[in-house]
Image (cartoon, rainbow, N blue to C red; front, side):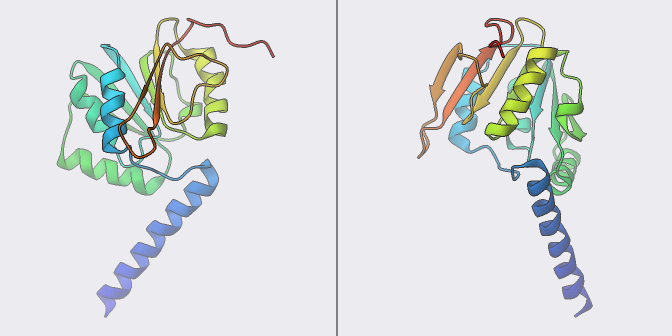
Length: 182
């Protein structure tokens, strides 16, 4: 009986944490589907250096990036405590030498050394991120998004995933197109 109450309390706390984070961040932690992940990895250019995965959620894309780019340093950002803890446990169980987890808001982090940035955010999140990308990314750095585009930019390449929604995947080059005038 006590074990059942403890498990119920843990489930309640985990669920409450996810709801709280969803309300605070504006989006819930969503895994990148298999077809979208395959399209992202196929469209991703060959890079070395740092790759930043913004909003790692449950880590489905972070582990795939670490495998696809073994000579790169993959930095997976997550601001929701439960998915971050899940990724931390997964990294303990399935270590990747080139994968680093960062707990916190990537909007306050430093992306200046990124060779590639990946993001699956919502419209408002992409607007906030666009300002940061314009300010911090070196010309020539790559930005790879899906579902939501980089506002005010034209993608260098676009692909559609073979999923039910034909999810769009966008590849951009920082500095290739000037930001729009405000």
